Image (cartoon, rainbow, N blue to C red; front, side, top):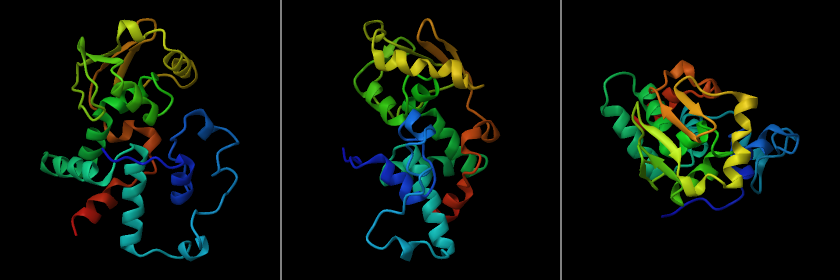
Amino acid sequence: MARYTGPLCRLCRAEQKKLFLKGDRCKSDKCPINKKRAIPGKDPKARTGKRSDYGVQLREKQRIKRMYGMLEKQFRLFFERALRMPGVTGENLIGLLERRLDNVVFRMHLAANRNQARQIVGHGHILVNGKPVNIPSYLVKPGDVVEVKESSKKLNVIKDSLKEVSKSGSYSWISIDVDALKGTFVSIPHRADVTDLADIKEQLVVELYSK
């Protein structure tokens, strides 16, 4: 399957906003956004002027898509699914993205970032309700138990990531048992609960795809 293999910091520079793609580095002074690095490309000044409505909508879609580490085709499928669901389409979309297994593993602090979470899931280190699942886009349901399989509990990458629980705490829609390396997806989060996406305007994505 196709995937982005270039430098992750370049994506943040392109959006001129932090996408938190590299864990602790994004919170440190080494982040290129903190250093006010220029937009990547041959003529960055040409892309800093006033954007059209379409340009604003496109950038917001790209930003959300890159934060969750998805390519266009898969992201569009998630949007179409959200569109068919009852309720507000934008909120449905965020709810679906938060239900992705790689995102749940990241939210449980079993990985430093979503890219690392996809690798952990893809390499077969995660169980859902006691059964191995190696599909990062697998949608977790309320009540599902997500855990690290027994033979993978000694992985340093997981142990190091769990230290973030004491720093950042847990999320209200996921209960975590740090000692057992497992957690329960309690409920689909309300839009207001996802505070790290507070400045995201998912309605712009709805407007873009509705044209």
